[in-house]
Image (cartoon, rainbow, N blue to C red; front, side):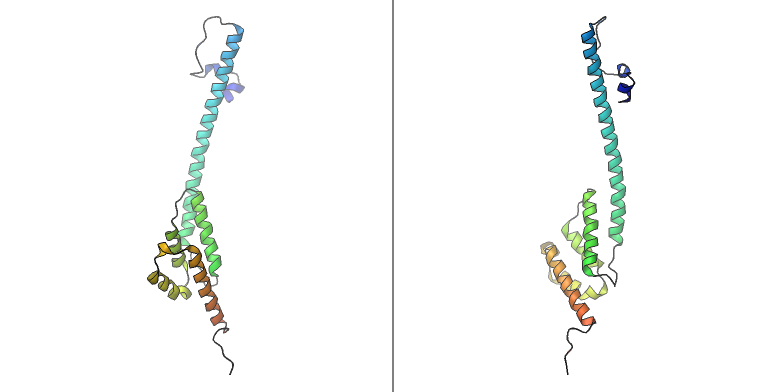
Length: 164
């Protein structure tokens, strides 16, 4: 683009077929326009390639940061399961958007390994009795939410208390 703006596109190599000596004005103008268009195409092609390289590098750096968050993610004792699950799904979606392939089984294993100790019994039960590749993520989520609800109810004395 800078070559066209400064009207020096004639000096750009491979600008088209050379003109014969003393061409007519119409032929010279057509040749000049063809060189301009070719120069502009080359400039846009270069800019596009440069932008793709920059975008690719930014995606790689972003992916590394998201992977780090994913690997370090843990459920805190005060967290609700659903909040932890939403954070995990958000991170996996961000990784997918950066080009990372995420298998559902890997995500479910991460869910199970992220949970606090209050989920230990249900995690062992799931791992021992089910093949994760055959489990739907929705079923896993509802099972863990139900377990958490029962745990919270028992902790607050709402389940199992009988009047005397």
